[in-house]
Image (cartoon, rainbow, N blue to C red; front, side):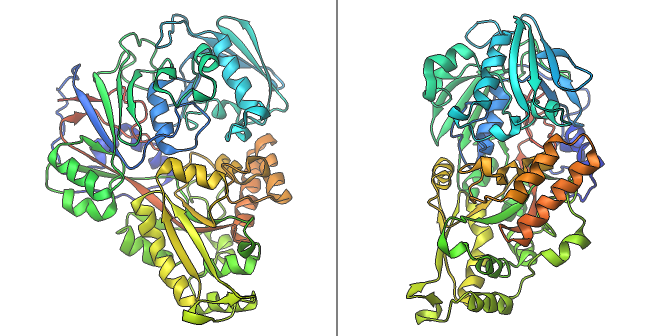
Length: 540
C-alpha cells in the first residue's frame, strides 16, 4: 500500500528523517535491532541520465543527484534543513556581513589522492562567477565579489553587499552547484571536465567508475571517506560497495524492473503504476515536493510575443483534470506559481484574480482578439500562417501531462505538437531556443530559484527568454535585502508578474513517489533531494 500525506511546511522538513518508515507501507521494514552491513550493490532506476558532472554547469536533476554522491561542499543542509558542516569545519562572518571566512577540514582527499586545499575552493567559485565561463547558475553567486586564499585550509569570500542567502547558496544542498571538484582535473580537461568519465574527481563518498551515456552509470565506494557530515548517522565510508544507476526512460520499464528485482529503487514512480506495484513486495512512498510544474513560452517566437496568445493557452489548461486523471491524485492543483509552503508564495486569494481558469470560450475569444481567425481543418490562421507551435518535453510523464492541453487547444483552433526529447537533447535544444514552448517540472528548495527568469540567465536557465526590468528588480531586492519581509514581498511581486503576464502557465505541484524492494535498507528521503548522499543505506 502506498501512503500519501498532505502536510504543512514543518512536517515537510521532518519527512527526511522518518519518511521511509512513517510514510511508506507494503514491504517489510528492517527491525530496529538490525545493524547495517557493508557490501552489495544498490541499483537505482531513473528516467533520464546526467548531461554533465561538472557542478553548477547543469540544472538537470540527474546530474545534481549524482553530484551529491561524487562531491562535497563547504556546508550542507541536514534532513531538517539546518546548516551543518561538511568540507568546512567552521566559519565566521564579519560584523558588516561582507566577509565570510571558512576553515577547511584537514586530511580530506580527492578521489585521485590529492589533498583538498583552499585553492580548489577558490578556483571553483572564481569560475562560477566568471562571465566568460557562461555558467548557467551564475546568478546564484551574484553577491560574490572575490575569493582569497589565506592558507591551504582557510578561504575568504568578499561580498559586494550583505545578503541573507549567501550561506544557503554555498551549501551543497542548493542543487550541488557549490560542490568542489579537483582544480587540477578541471584545468587538465577543460570543457571535457564532467563529460569524460576520467575527468571527474571529487571528495565525495562515491567515485565514478564507469559511465555509459543514457544506459548506466556505476559508482563505487570511496573507502578513504572519513569526513562525512553529521547530517548522517554514518560519517565514514558508505555501507554499499556500489551504486548502479540505470537509465530507463519508460515508466512501465522501471516498474517492471522494480517488480522483478532488476532495480532496487525507482526514484520516480509514475502515478499510474502505484496499484501495480502495491502488494508485490515493493514499498511505495509518496512525499510532498516543492515543485512548480508549468508550461513556459519562448518569448522570442513571434506568436508568443502577443500576451493574448499566451493567456489563451493558459485558459486551455484544466489543472483539476490533469491532477485527477493523469497524476491519479499524486499532485496538488496550482493556485499560483510557487508552492504554497515556500516563503515568498503569494496567498491563494491574492493570486486568484491573476490566474487563468480553464475556459475554452475565453481561450477562443483571446485568439480571435489577437487576430487569429478560424481556418481550414479548424486551425486558426493569420496572414496566411496557421496557429501552431511545438511543446518540448523530456519524460513520458511530462508528455502525458501536456496531452490534455494539446486536445483543448485543438478545440480552440491551436495546433500544438508535442516533441519528446532525451534530457540532454532537451537541455541543448531549449538553450539554443529551438522550442516554441516547453514543459518543466521545476523542483526547488526556496523561492530563490526564480533566478531562472532574470535577464542575466538568458539563454539558460531562462529558456523562456523573459527580459523584464521589473522582474530583475524584484529578484535583486530578494537577494540583497536584509529584511525577510522585504524578501517575501519581492518574491510575491515576481510570482505575480510571471503569472499575470502569462510568462508561465502553472499546472500543479507534484509529489515525489519512490518505490523500493525490501533488500534496500536504511533509506530516508531528504525533503528536497530525496536519496541525497546515501550514507546510511545498505543492502540486505
